[in-house]
Image (cartoon, rainbow, N blue to C red; front, top):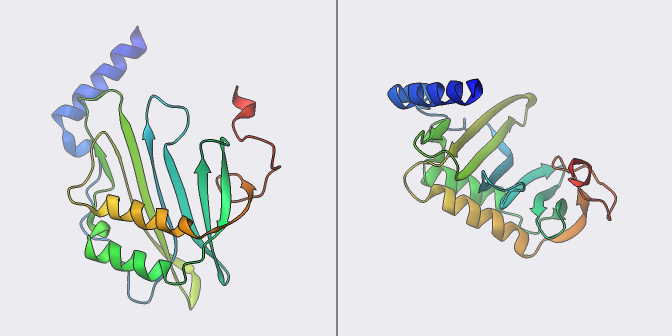
Length: 187
């Protein structure tokens, strides 16, 4: 009972002081010298155990790999993406839809369950891989205006259209036994 009351008080305070619910992001436009090396997007229901959609596309040397959650197999799968201009298209989309201006987090304190989503992209300086820049945003029952997230998802999904399946993996892309399920140990 004490825990429920504490949560109720915190949610009430967030409703009164919405600036506490998420840090504003004024502008994280990627620097011209930075190269996109990965992009991720996921969403799902807070009432479900598994994400409805979760995909990361990343550079791996000369290859482009996609790590996508497969709900039918209850595991992640790694694919070789056959879309040479994927990162150029994603960069154009992020700039055109101004995804880099999204707030860090969106939250609707009046909904206790519902949907969540998250987006991130990582950029590195090709001359100095230790230098990087991130754009990330997430939400719970709320999100930015416009069609940016919809466009991100469409482009990420199109990366899988002609992709070649490589192997079952964990969320980071590390190969796992083809017959195992990531969530077996939690049952």
